[in-house]
Image 1: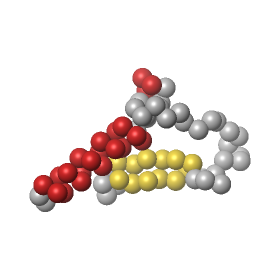
Image 2 (image 1 turned 120 degrees about the horizontal axis):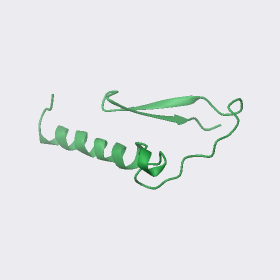
Image 3 (image 1 turned 180 degrees about the vertical axis):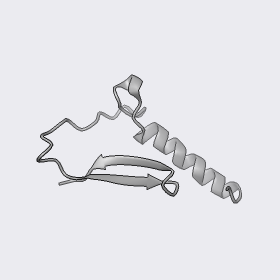
Length: 68
């Protein structure tokens, strides 16, 4: 449910940021449209835990490795 123009602008700007900067695109080798390379693969035993960033109340989710 959208509660006015400001709320709609927030929803759209959040989605555009997610789509362009965070969402992996298969045709680009699972890189986002921004062109940022994914972090290099490392040994699974030494990598930090995976964390989740929820956007728009959990509708969009972005998973990443926590900094050591």
